[in-house]
Image (tube, rainbow, N blue to C red; front, side, top):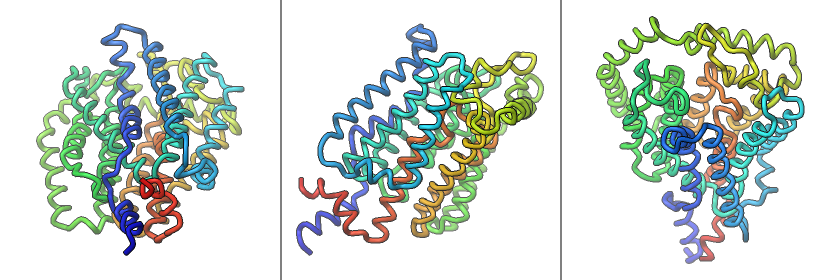
Length: 421
């Protein structure tokens, strides 16, 4: 084997190559969830200032990524736009921006700033992908996200619990955010374990316990469904290991049984009905009725917060529709439903092109998690599976597919800079 081929083989086989900037970006994508809480509770500023600080950091990272991307490109923007899933992301961002023209938002400048933050996330990932292979960039993003989430989970344990016994701060760092971060990080860690990109079992164990302790009902159910699919379909894990994992899950559940019983008592006797299933059905009914009134292009970006009337005797203000399908239908009408189906459907096809094995199973289980969670959760601006993550996993799936097929031309192009060094 020639020396060039040997270096190429090592570059493809090594799962530990990292991008420092991508690690930092991944950590930021997780850590910013708590930024407003820290700004309000520690710095004493108002929530708008905290949100502006997050946006400013996002723009700074975008500028750094832009300067870092100058020079030879692993992927050009043109080559990335050939990926169907990436094109769907661009369509979603473009239409959501155009919808500001008819949005019922309270503050158009503020809503546009939120849109800029969402678009900046996607552009940062695009720029990172220009500098290294998709595998290196995506693995680094995931590692940064996991480590940052572990730190946030530790903070959540230290913080005083809410009145209903759940982790987090109800206003700025709630239990659903904590649960979602933990579940997403666990799925990323499981992927890295399968790719032999580090030993992540301690992080998985810690985040799993934190997820369970968060008492985020929808997130826990969605996670159990996705893990159930993973257990059944992943043949790389022995039956003995699966039985041990099930036994461990049951044991942890028994340890927390007293907490679950206490939470159930609070939930059924003193819970905020706007946050229960009963409250959700009221929100769903209202949103569906309003969406039918504007069925084609919807109410526009950021058209719920401070716009729809408060719900219940406690005047709960809904920030989103508590259901991803209804959220997209309300915001963008039938166009939103088409975009949602196109984004998730195209990403699913990207995963299905992978060879049968653990990698494909884990990626599909990740998609299942967000689809199931979307039955009772949503995001006010982005999708539950963020657009930046959709681009990341779509390009990663393409990179892995090319390696599995032995696409020598594609692989040599992506690792050319590594070899030349």
